[in-house]
View: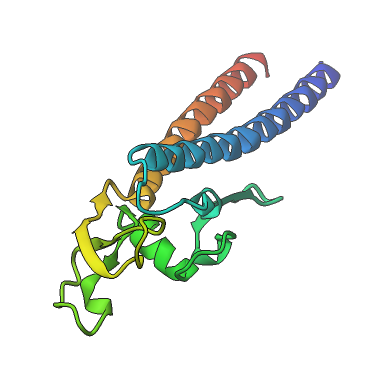
Length: 180
């Protein structure tokens, strides 16, 4: 009788380890999928006509699971790998945090009026037969902040996965209570 209970406990511990491994992978995979989809959605929400994308925002986030099962997601301009005419910090701030599709604040140039809240495209783009970027054009396109959306959707995914994992652990506990 005692030997059967020990075997049941050993089998249960193995099942719990497998469940933990399964969910460690699921947490990381789900968050990576969410991040990639949100960046893809951001890029597809506007087709640039005045500049060429480098695609570096796909590198702006990282998801890790430690050996101790600690899940971390983080965002940083230091993760950006493509080179731009502007700094990675600028791309991170205007595109990832604020949702702008290019543009610059007029206040960054002495000869322009100050307007720090709105970004503008510069005209004309290169290849139009004359000097490029010699005047301010229209207001830049702006969509939802990819960062804000990632935080919201990643946190929701974590909560959902924790709920599902806890439910399976509760089922294992109930099974043990009935059989020990």
